[in-house]
Length: 161
Image 1 (tube, rainbow, N blue to C red):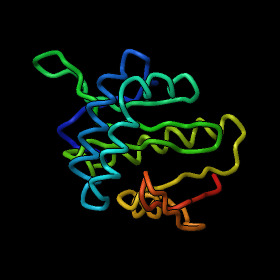
Image 2: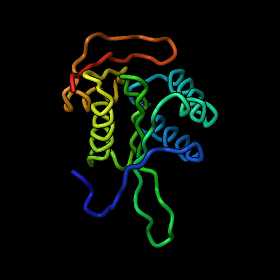
Image 3: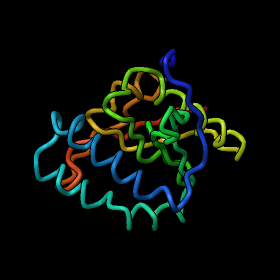
């Protein structure tokens, strides 16, 4: 499902996207994840997802972004992001205003297609409490729970593709 009012496209992220990715991720952490996590965890994740770390980690994995096509002002708006590192899904973030509109599903389908093209048979991730239900809807199953003192509780999930 997509938002009928928004035309979007998915592309591979570039290093120059790090600042926009930082803004997007920080917004999602505060608006969406803070209901499920302590202030300590949110602060730790905000520091972890700073633009310098984003740039460094982009060199180790494939990252995609989903953007709204330029409007009257001519600026593209970043709606979400997702990354693939080996067989691990990382950092799926969808702008709080855009959650539930199918953008996360489109990004995940793009990632899964790339994983299949690479010959991968399974994908896994550490899903946040906030994202667990989304991944379950997409066919991922919880193998076990994790409680990290810095990242907080999460779920190790997996799916054959």
